[in-house]
Length: 501
Ligand SMILES: *Cc1c(COP(=O)(O)O)cnc(C)c1O
Figure 1 (cartoon, rainbow, N blue to C red):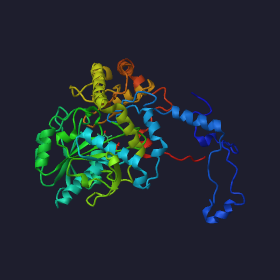
Figure 2: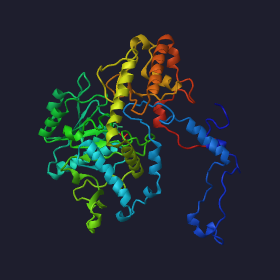
Figure 3: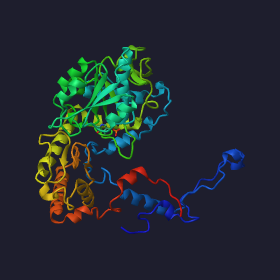
Figure 4: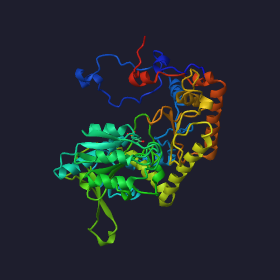
């Protein structure tokens, strides 16, 4: 893979005078840029690459080949639900009718508002809650919005003493982060050895200063939290509300509903469970749902459907309006959130339909358990039970990975790097923090048995390599464009600009 274009920046391919475009003839005969006035004109030369069209095409095509995505291969990134994003969703999201200016008056945007309302209602039915807002831009943004709903609820009752929120030690990092941004103090509740919330640890934390409790279900270990009814009862008795982190709702679809379990507020990630694309920081969508009695606190604006009363010939017809509530927590986004993502989720919901949505969740559980049971002969399974859509290994079994004190010890990081050589994206590693060598695998329902079998075979092969030739695994990846990166530097000191030497 060594050619003129490979691994180069477009600026390095630039040659003075090369042009890859042709502009139409200027139609403003008689005008010159100078007429704009000096203050509107750039005073220095722009630095732009000068390339012919073919160079540009090859540059970007090569660059896209260096990327890894669901469209290129298996991507079992635990907690992220990297399910396939059907191309149909993309086509529908690109329909010109949905490409509206954000301040289009509601009467000229009835189709878009209807779509928003139908997604809102469908999610409410799936979740067993009363109403959703689709305005938040991401899961973490939904958490913040949901916590603001909880705060608005307490404030509306004149109860300003509830400044603390309970978060399990297994929670996704965004939970404590969102709570802190919301100005809440975080109180951690421990997990028992079976990986679920410890009720005995919870009881003494409850009191008049508790705003509520955040729970993730299935939790970050991929386990169903079995004691929810009891926990919800305890939290409600102390005056707090129950928050459901539904980023990973996938395995629950059509099987059980957070609203029925006693939750008051929740968020869902459209860019996980509902097959819209994610990665690279967005765009995403984190709808927030509430039970009856909390609707007025949701962010403005809300989309409401009203009966069209003007004519008896159209009695089923609805008109859609934007509604702002005085009790609302305010605005969390511009207009109606990432609308094109909502269109994709709508397409997904309708193409599966009510009958097939539960199948998606069940297949994701079957696939996860299939991989777990197939690999436990080679990898350490710290919690031995039926999982939901994902599960966690705690590194290689000692007979393959060696003793963790030895310099030859093959770690989870080594396994993850070696997987890249075999064309698989690595699972989530070193998260959750409950185990030292966590390897968190989530296959999703969209993978075929052949893909799962290939992955299992490769994971076993890496275990065998770790035993026979640990150096091979410890120095992986061998076949990728770059070898081991400094992960911290790559995040903390990214270079986004090109400086000619
Ligand atoms: C992904 C995830 C989040 C955060 O979602 P973002 O869209 O990345 O902000 C929160 N909680 C859980 C359990 C998640 O898996």
